[in-house]
Length: 296
Image (cartoon, rainbow, N blue to C red):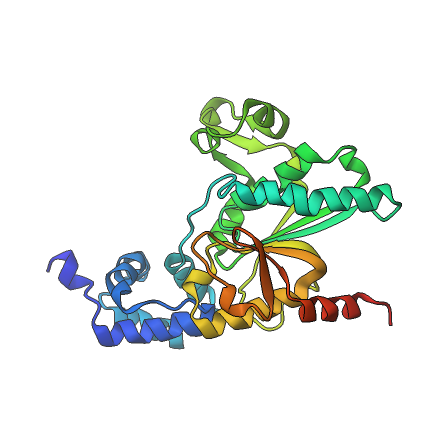
């Protein structure tokens, strides 16, 4: 029996997995993704010694009370393409529209603090790019209260992000002065790797989070939320649901950063564009956020 026939995935089996993935993660697999799903799940079948996908599906439904294998399945299915300073215009906007106003508020006597969220953080490059931007643009950073939350549904990529170690080639496009300020060079067996310096790494807290779970285990009031190239995997209903929840986590003046291929104009009653895939709360949402922030 060749590998293709050993691990064949029928359309009926694909529909079962498609429904399960959607229910548990919000990811809407398109009809043409059958072979992609098959390829990504074959390792899990081999791990358990199963010869058919229906055996693996029954394992997930009947023999996984802790949900550990369901998490492995989600880890296998989700896509994680990222890099340092991907879509660089967003980080210029972060400086201009978030850091500069925060600096001005601090100069006027307001508490110098920042709260930012990288939702769908993958292996951490986005969250650390935010942290690097802050380190390179805020003076006397030790006097600031800065917290960056980095979350992803995939536990494996969360652990990689938490480690903060990357191949040296992943930072080839980063200027030398930033490398010197923010990165450490690996030695010995890790000579081909770099790591984040504590001043950068300690700004970021990593956690596993499924955006479809209710409720989220924190309350927001974020200055900025980055959720880039995540919505493309959700259908319209899930997109609206998640965006409505993001809006409740933003400060009245907070910004939402979407991915380059994501168009949120149809959600104009919640978020309004102020730049290239950069949004702020619509007036009614901003008023609600202001009211919620007022002491009762």
